[in-house]
Length: 413
Image (cartoon, rainbow, N blue to C red):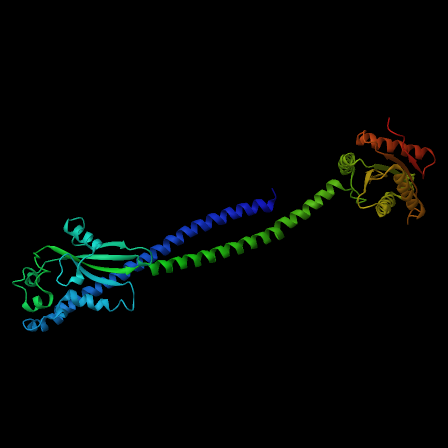
């Protein structure tokens, strides 16, 4: 597994965990903020209703009660005033509702529905404290709303003047609403609830959009971070390491003087090529060459001149080889060539071309230099050491024949 892949896997895991953690936190936060906004709006509506009731009770009703004997005005009833005032908001703010839901109302529009009856009965049965509000949710989808309910409990005797029996109720009220509903109330009885409903869809939808926007920005930031870190990793770590590895590879596999591959690397290449040659049933040859009288060059002209001859010889060899071939410094002044898909005749011709190239052009500091060659073609049976040994034996035969010549190795036994 490469360093980049490991780094990206770890980075992706960290970013995914961070995104999941941040997403969970942001989702809870925006949801809670939306619910708090709904709760705040519901409290505003409830207190608005209470303010309207108080205003009607304290400043409107006392001035209109004198007309009660002649004409009943519903506007003097605090519940009616609050309901009508807040009802006018619904055209501007759909879903915001206020209602004084009663089990047995005088005005039938105030009759409690099924879920409102359940809330009222919770107060009547003691399941909910009379001094506290009850909060909950009702409806689904776009009609989902939060409600806040307060109990309507008879605490003032004046209320019974209109709601105890039809006989004591104002005739003008009976004339408007009849004598069938809104009677039979008693002191300290919870007869209904003040309830406000505030829609949750829009705040929750806003919270959802906020969540998506925040997560989108977060994901975009993570993607940008991912790209920047990968580019930084490439420029600051991977590429320098790759260059260093190439240098280390060169140091481990190349001869520092001639820039040819070294003995160890040559054997690795030879083993691989022999395996491939066996599969393809093709030819493979090696050529051993040794610079003639190299010790005399070192002794006469110095080791620096000898190094110049070695480097120049390596250069002349490389110029004649194909890209598929391989040349190595085998040791001292000795070189070896690997010729792929090359039978013995072609290998002999190549060796002769290299010999002529070395011998024909004088070296700057030492003049003409020659080399002796031994050529061996693999028989598909012997190992690499046996093959090289045959080429080396042929090389020594070339030395014994007067040097500066090419000798073909004997066939393997």
